[in-house]
Structures are given as C-alpha cells and as structure tokens.
Length: 456
Image (cartoon, rainbow, N blue to C red; front, side, top):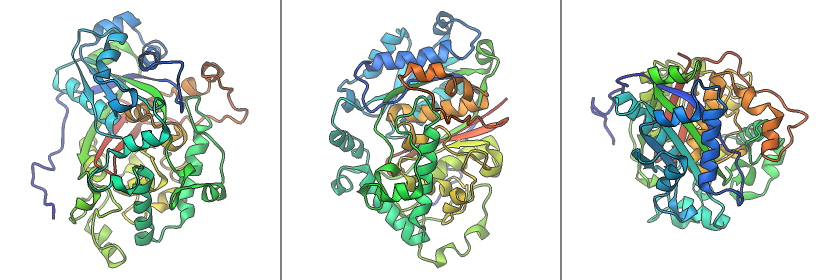
C-alpha cells in the first residue's frame, strides 16, 4: 500500500506569476501531405503572434523569446530524431536553448508545465510552447502500434497493440463495478462530435444519436469507432510569459494559476491498493460505504491515481474548493468515452462510482454547470498527440479571453482550411467565464497534468 509522506503532498508554488499571452492552431487532419511539420508549426505560431491582437510585432516577439519548449509524442511517426532542433531552426529561434518533452499522451500538458516552471523560477521571461504530431507517414495499423508502445510492452502490448483494447478492458471492469449503461458513455461521444461541428479545426465532426453510437462498428468491445479518439496531423502553440512581459504584449493575458502533474505505474496491474486521496470537496464520509459493493480497492483497474494526484496538487495550488462550482469550462483528455467518465471521478466532478451523473445531469453540456470539451475534444476534433494538451489549453484560453467567436465563427477561417461554415453553426462562447481547467493524460493513466487558467 502506498503511504504518502508530508513532502509527497507538498503543494507547489510559483516564485512569480505565470501568464499565457496567446495561442494558435492549425486545423487537424488524418493526412496533411501538402505541408511538412515545420510548416505546420510555423502556421500555428503565426496565428498566435499575428492574429491575437498583440501589441508587439512578430519581430519584436521573436527578439523577446529566451527559452523554447517543444512537444512531440514519438520520433517514429516522422522518422526524425531531434525534430525539435529542425523546428527551432525553421521558426528562427536559434541559437536560444530549448528542451523537447515526451510523456506519452500528456506530452502537451507536460510541455506547458516545463515552460511554466522556467518562467516561475526566473530562468526565462518569454517562452513559446510548440507541439505537433506527424501521424500520416505510416499506416493506421503501424501508428496504433507506435502509440500502444506507451503502455508496458512486456505485458500489455500483447493485448493487441492497440490502445482501444486496453481501455475496452477498463470499460468492462468499470461497468461491472458501477453498473453503468452503455448509453451513458454514448452520450459523451454524441456531445463531443456535435461540438466539433462548430470548429473549423476539427477532423471528425458529426451529429449522432445515442443509437448511432451504439450501432457503430466495434473497435474493441464495448467501444465503437465513434467512441475513440482520432489519429491526427497538426500543430498547436502557446505563448507564455512573466507578468511584465505579458502585459507589454497584450491587454488580455490569462493567468496560469496552477499546473501540476501526477504519475503512476506504466503497467496497470502493478497499481497497489491505497486509501483514496481526498480532494477539497470530499471527506471520509464521501466513501464510507463505497467499498461495500463490487469494488474492493482503489485505484484498481478503473481509476487513475495520476489524475487524482495532479488535480489534488493543482486544486490546492489555485484555491479550488469545488471544481463544478469554481470552473466555468473544462477540457478533458477524452481519448475514449470510458476514460472521460473515469476522469470525471478522478478530478472530483462526482464521487467515485457516480461519474455517469455528470453527463446525465446535463452539467457537461454548453450552458450546463460545467461545459466540457466545447472544443470537440479528442473524439471530435483531434489527437495529434504532441499538440493535444496544448490545443486544450488554447481552447480554454480563447474562452477566457472572450475570443472563441473570433477563432471559430469567422467564415474566413473555415475557408482557410477548405471548409464551409455550417448553416446550423452555433456559438459556444461561454458567458463571462473567469476560470477554466484542462486535463492532459497519457497511457493508461501513467502521466497526467492538470492546468488551471483564470482571468487576473
């Protein structure tokens, strides 16, 4: 049994405030043969620097940068080691120092954490975070095997070299323990595919019914294709800075009030039983009768200690008491519908065993108590892995800056990507949002980051 010491649960703090100045994206596609990786990263950086109403020119911004962080999940896809060096040169940031981050599916979130640490410590004042993934130079089968290598190759990879197989087993166990109907998971897929319909960046939008999801072809029982994330090509960028630099560059910087990480064993079966780590909105009574049913251990095979750890630290760092009440929007790492409902519990939106209530209550929808994955998420919009955690924070940033319509509703943006703005388009700008959260998740919960953004 894991027992925490006082140092293990020390709440992180920034030595000085960290701000996000702007964000930029490409669109996301299954294949992008007309643009190489460097071009995609440049496109996302140009959006961040040139289309966010900054008070400095592109050249002034370049001259302000003093450290760079890059985010790429796997060198295998592009068959290029040290790809960050190539991108750095292309973007014009040589000879500045840089670091490339790799923590599986949480690579994007971890890259933002690394940039925030550089600024908070005083090591740097102005840091761009650039993430991408090039998943179209290999077949889908080979790509799935690359991604599956982020689980334990000694034991779990033999389940089929496909992450859907890992999460399908979790789904079966979770449904057994909590008696969750398939319809509850299908509602998550319906929501996220629908919200992707209103994003010019999305790869897999669609209007579906619960019946459509349940009748869709099965990837790995019980998960259908429409309940699984998409393999994508694309890039995302965030511009981080200290307070003085941020306000010199923009009138609408957003404070990164917390970003924290947690980890757990790569092999899921190695996860030992322990007492539930309680979040600020929970107490001992919350789980007094929880283990009287079909569940007899935690985190077991159906919860993520890494997500709970990241949320625990970030909530205490940012002063969060109840995430449903304190956040105005949320982006989760919905690689699969089952991982989404698991995350609802891990980050305290509902107690363990009751995650289905968050989607079934309507809280997760636009105009609900805590709109979730208004971006379309990984299921509807993208999972270009190295860009994913950055993309999530970009979407939260634009909401808090009240720029969602600027970057989603303009017909020119749709035309830019060879699309037509839908006739049934609807604005998903949250009314007067003050605080948002983004969860970046890797493997079968081996690494997770929790980022909290708020208006200063």
